Image (cartoon, rainbow, N blue to C red; front, side):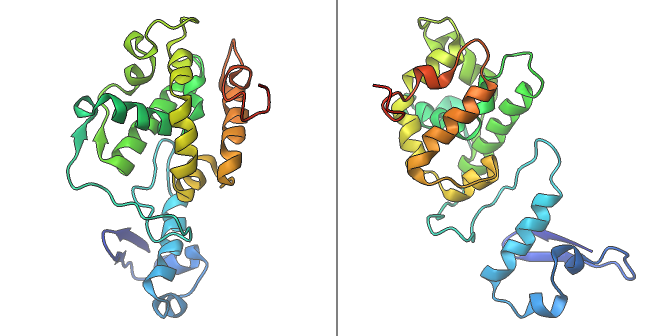
Length: 217
């Protein structure tokens, strides 16, 4: 009636359950047990994903159908304070790309959830503990008192190269997890700008960022 995962699926049994697990997965026990492991995991991932509550994410992405998925979680958890400046810029670029909702105004409904999403990404994908995720994006030291006074906006202007790089190397499975779609690498910046525009208030990211990629230069 339920399945948990570690390195292999572990099933919970309830005699006479009215919610058979394999029925929920859209298969049968016999069909499932005769499949090789790499064909079983998509069933379990879909089952787990359908049970997620707001703000929850899957902590594993391996064994996906995507060819460029080779990620493994570090054994050692690090604090974000231990990262070098270049490392911080790189993971901030990744999170900005995957969670464009960070451009929402501070009191916008769902803004807190955006920072939770970022923190979950850092922990589940990089093994990094972010104590104050909001400060990592919007503190004055990040924006360095840029021209607009909007720290998230100014900080993003400073990491355009890192975001563009992340759009090329991040795994397809991450875009499916966070965007619900998997654009081709050369279309990811345009798709990100479309999403960022829908969240930003008082400015339009596509008017300031990645102008060359949009043919505006």
